[in-house]
Each structure stands twice: as structure tokens, then as C-alpha cells.
Amino acid sequence: EKDISILAIESSCDETAAAVVRNGREVLSNVIDSQIALHTEYGGVVPEIASRKHIEKINQVIEKALADADRTLSQMDAIAVTYGPGLVGALLVGVSAAKAISFASNIPLVGVHHIEGHISANYIENKELKPPFLCLVVSGGHSHLVVVKDYGEYEIIGRTRDDAAGEAFDKVARAIGLGYPGGPKIDKVSREGNPDAIHFPRAKVGDAAYDFSFSGLKSAVLNYLNSCQMKGEEAVVADVAASFQKAVIDVLVEHSMDAIAKYGYKKFAIAGGVASNSGLRKAFEETCAREGIDFYHPSPLYCTDNAAMIGVAAYYEYRNGVRHGFDLNAVPNLKL
Ligand code: KG4
Ligand code: ZN
Image (cartoon, rainbow, N blue to C red; front, side, top):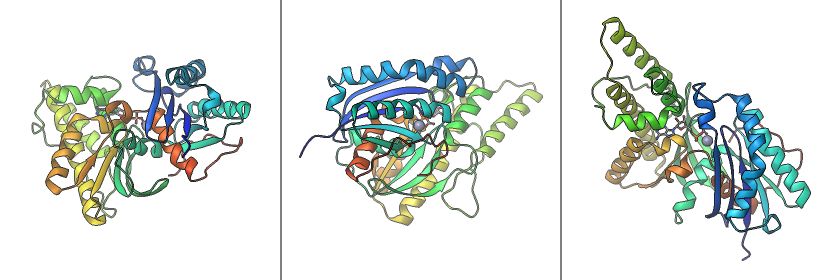
């Protein structure tokens, strides 16, 4: 069978990224230009700044991805791009670049859903992983429990009612003075803290068993910090971070294990920026080992936003016959 090589582009949030992926599983190059330093002074991603920076960087990132892979554009079988969900101005930069390249080179265009990309990151280092399996997607914008029925076929069985898991990490980090991006910083200081020091609530969402809610937890942390201040006490940052992180992990593990039991899957994967959290990985490793479930996760590099995961997802879409026209548009709230 002929090799399929895909040039993939990702610009949905604050990373300008391009990659070359062969046969859906082999990453030949993976270039990521992170804007994190640029947004840090504002305490979060500023959409207008993100779009402008994507425009400045996209061409050189794409050229570097081809050069690192030792490939030319004419050797590509498809041009893949994230077209949603994400920041509309940021998405448009990648979508426009992909359409222009596809038009000029006559190479087919394949639009990819960002969450499908995150899930597909698991295929890169776990060559034996195939659907069906259950996947927990936890990122800055999403907390989803997804049944991966087949390549390109998904069913969302749980979602967040308010804040996404990563958003909660970022907001709590800001409140305890750790800055942006909060996830990695809370992860790090939590290792020096006591996760049982403060009991924060584990939110239950009444009618939908697998839905998440993190805004109550965030408020509980803010209330705790306020009450410390009123009493003239200094909150122990490492203990607050560790106790908050434990509360998030407990809820994610409990809902995931309930869904695994109910649906009877033996394979479970995690994906998205929060999936690189060391405490979360450890908790799932232990729980899955105890329950006899095969546990999969990408390396941290493939958990946060990257284009390799888009190239992987695009390969299976391409094989399913998916092609997009030049009317492909950015869809900020694209459904899976
Ligand atoms: O997947 P991602 O790069 O972008 C989105 O699609 O949203 O996820 C970014 C999110 C941020 O909220 C960041 O704080 C969080 O992932 N994150 C982490 C860790 N690394 C990144 N959260 C917890 N622990 C980490 N180690
Ligand atoms: Zn993402």
C-alpha cells in the first residue's frame, strides 16, 4: 500500500504549529511556536494578539515542518488544518494558509476537529491502540468524556456544565499568585503540598452522571483564600494547590471509572493539556491497574496543542474519503 504523508496545520489558540505525519502514526516533524510568553503579562490569551502573531509565524512554521521532515510540498498527499473549535481569528489564519497551499499545489484539503486531534494524539506512541475505547479530553477549553466508536466516529457522554478543567487550573493559579499558564505551575507546586490539607467540594451534577462542573470548586478556593485573609492568616500556596488539584483529579477519575464500568470498555485514554498533569496520570495509572483497564496517554508534548495530532486525525478522515472545498471556514463552536 502506498504511503500517505500529510502536512498538518494548527492555530486554534496560542500555538502556531505545523507537522508532517506519515500513515497516521509516524511523526516526521512537529514544529510548535508557542506564544505563551507573549500572553503571560495579560494573565491569559488575548485573541487579537494571538491572531496577529499567527499571521507573522505561520509561513515559517510550515516551511520548517517540511524541512525538518526532509520533504517537499509536492510529496504531500493532503493538507490538514484545524477549523474548529477555537478562537475564530486564530483559526482563520491556519484555515486560510491551508486553503491557499491546497489551491496552489492542487493537493486535497482536509479540515479537522481540534478535539478529534487531541484524542488522536494517543495513536502516535501507542501503535497498538485502536477504537473502540473511552477517552477523557481535558484541556483549556474542554472537559469531555468521549466514546471513540471508530476512527472519526465519536459520542460525547459527558461534558462540563461551566468551566473546563484547564480553565479551573488557570483561574485558581491566578488567584494564588502563580500566574499563567496555571496548569503546569499548580502541577509543580502541588508536589510540595499536602493534598488533604483543605477539603474542597467534589461537585456532583444531578441528572447527567458523566457531566462535570468546576466553577463551584473554583469559588470554594476563592472563598478559602478570602477567609484566610479575613483571619489575617497566610494561605499555604502549595497546600491550596495540592488540595485543589486532588479535588479535580478525584472527580475526573470517579466519572471516568463510572463510565468505563457502565459501557464495559477495557481501554481508556486521556488527552488534552490537562492530561499532562502528573497527579492525574498517577491516579489513572493506579486506578486502571487495579481495575484491569489498559490505560493510554500521550507524552506531554502531544497533550498540549500541536499539529502532529491534527495530522494523525486527518489521516483517518482522509482514508474515510473526507475532503473539504475552498469554502471551508473557521467554526469557533464546531461540534464533534
Ligand atoms: O490542550 P491545550 O494545550 O489547549 C486547549 O485546547 O485548550 O490545553 C491547555 C490547558 C491550559 O488550561 C493549561 O493550564 C492546562 O492545559 N495544562 C495543565 C498542565 N499542562 C497544561 N493542567 C494541569 N496540569 C498540567 N501539567
Ligand atoms: Zn487543545
